[in-house]
Length: 253
Image (cartoon, rainbow, N blue to C red; front, side, top):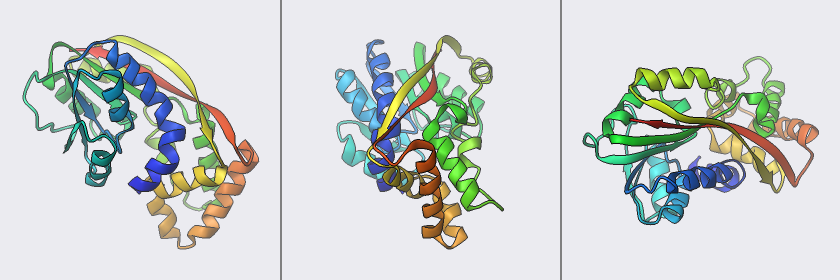
């Protein structure tokens, strides 16, 4: 799964926002940076370039992601870690960053409380979340394809997890409950560009948790064919370009 994610989804969906977040991070002139839910290291690599003087520690709960991330961004310190139980001392970082990861935390207030604990006084927490599913045509088209291919039990991962934390007021409330103060919150729309719908569909079907649901169905090729057909009808065969909307938050400890 990490290899498909890195090959087909990172360049199209995640790199544009990683470059934006790294630029915002560098403007804060951090010395020690902790990254949560680093995945295969797209933001990590961008941070190492944009904030070259910083010491970057990258973490992810998934050991396979960490193993691949080490090869993609070897100048960072990599460690498997649970964001809700960070194995780091109090006040050890002046910046914590997270790219499209907070939606996955089972208890966000608990995770945000851990962020506040490991931040030095006045340290910042910089992260982004996806907007509503309708604001991401790639993923909306994928979901439509899954619902067509598996009408009796379509996977609900994309509406409920990546796009399930798309209310800025709810995010701000969780940050406040953890003792963090929102300094800045903004909506950001960037464009993703894919060489083909077939490659993009492969990334989603093989490189995300919907893979398990498709495998349980038993006819993966038939599901893929329907998904590709639906995505092509909505977006064109490729090369394709579409807007993607996210919210960017900066909070202070």
